[in-house]
Image (cartoon, rainbow, N blue to C red; front, side, top):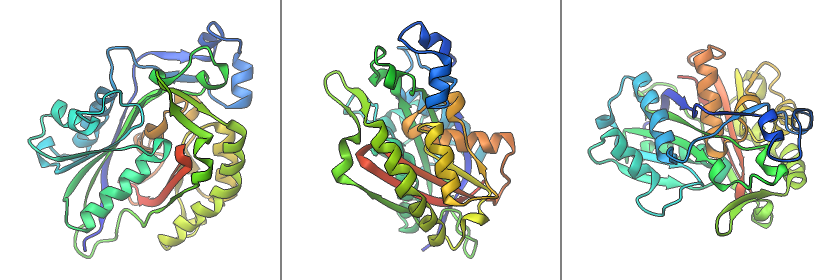
Length: 315
């Protein structure tokens, strides 16, 4: 079976920027309170006329252009999202329609903040099994649609955006560009992060998530490295789900990736759920913080309480 690789990435964020000072006008909070507790300074917020599939399509178009591929060359579209309002058509079908694709397979994957790394593994598996040759993998969420803007414990966290990757079959004999996935869940803690109710609202047990992430996830991340035949010291970059800077920084230290660049896009973008990993990864590539072929750990965690991670080679 042929392995797969990421050939290009892209990202998109809405134009509107919401600062901590702006939030202080909505709820009882301050820039000092927010930065000291979660490390976020700004976030991008989509307007009412910017649905999830539009955010996703913008990111996808950039990834396709960077890969030198046309929409017609994609045979599978996977969209990781937990903020789709409609059940059908799904976001993948709507993205395909926006991009003028003639007839790809289309699937949404709802694993909340770990959605992109689950979708990336699914793309890799599809390529290895011969079910697809070129896959468009997107993480997109409009968290502002599911946020209670009167709740200062959650509204300070969220942002909107999308990130995308083009996944293609690796050349015969070439090194795999997407390593084996390490994934799982903690069902008894499923309610620690949730989007539920009518209308749906985001809520979480912040302290429980913090304790679990900083104590359990380092070993999972190290295991993902071992599955790829690497050590944490070999990594050029670590891109964790951008939940909260107070989770990202201690988690990165405990993984032991002492030579790696650590993505800290949460400072500028907030928690964008399934979009956070591809968004942060795409920015590292765009900024030249990583080079082609560099090993990068992607690791998502969050709702359900689910997790998934793999080492990829930078496009």
